Length: 439
Image (cartoon, rainbow, N blue to C red; front, side, top):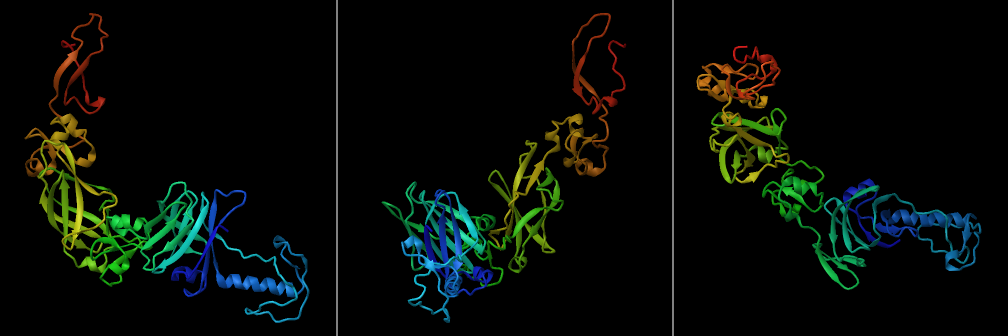
């Protein structure tokens, strides 16, 4: 045993261990004698430890095992069978004294470390049990115990590099830790929720002190979230951040042709009652410029951004990405963990106004060649869909040769000629014939 601490558990751990949150637990860190560079955290209800002590005493008083403690240099003798009532308040007598006992107090390891633990302190916040563990390498481990066999580390703090943490104390108000190393006493905040700026980041850290307050749209303690509604403060256990999930088709990209009128729709999740009754808006940001339109929540899982003309980016750019933010209640934003965005594209510039290049663009753009305007554009822009429009499965009609080489060759023929131009076909099968000097 390297260090131990007795503390009452949080209600979640107490329930898992079939005890009450008023029962005491021993939090102990161990290291192997042969491998002191690693250690483990184990937990024991004190009631269970007392039961094992009593059980060992009863075993000895029934004539089983030995009395005497060899590691204390006392004489080891066989236990004497004595007819005596042994309860929790039994204090021993002159018979069978001292008693060692062979029945161990066992527990599962809840967390292992690849450095030796040197100090431990436990506390609780809400329903959670939190353990602070000082390490030989001068680090502080912040740990949440989920149940009697599992815990996880949610933060590692470098206190004093290569100087063992010898002791940990908690301020009475529970906000600060004091850690002692060989030449230093350090003060460390128990929680620092305000450094997390999005709901996903806040809950993703799994800090039991922190949750997402919908009222303020901030990462904060439960007590600092003034709204007492059941869904006003989201803990890391639920990980139910209100967020954009993706487009209606499941992709992360919304495609919009430049200067088109279009309604943008996205899937959303975890829209609780407080949000569902709010006013929504969609904010599109490009290179520091913002455009906002009203939005509507449909069926609690879909946001429609009102129709707008997508002409607020330079028409000289082939395409540009606009960051999408869904705003509720005027200033609070839904999380956008997958960076769902709008790709505003210009068919004409993507294809350099070439029919061949136009028809070879990625099918996702839905670009085609408008024969009347001689431009690459979406169908709706080709004289409002009334003019002849070639799609990617058709062939450009007017080939143009810009150059060819070589310009000469032997009479016998056999010269390979390279022809450069536009609208020369999309595949080899589109070429019916090629003649040189009428041959």
